[in-house]
Length: 106
Image 1 (cartoon, rainbow, N blue to C red):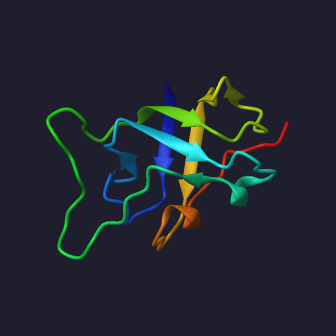
Image 2: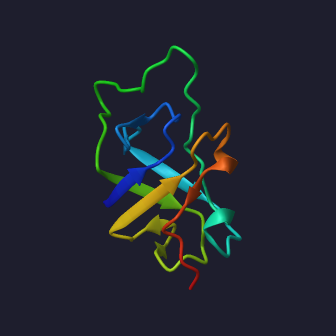
Image 3: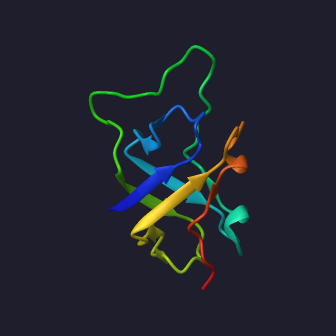
């Protein structure tokens, strides 16, 4: 599991910079740098909605990350092996406005 810090404050799964989804997927199959990646699991929080939590998934610092960014040095068989991952996307309206700042091209 990876230590995840989420800077996408308007994601429905974000609770105090932690993710309550349980696992996420980072997209960017042909990414060469972090801005070519995205959090495919992003879901925009709508006005009046609070962060989503359920009896199964609670905000967690450690999370499983599936990764499609095959050129990233932390990608092993489509799983992220980084010790820590930062997801950015302040004010994102869609997943393409988010990014994995931890991405490093091999």
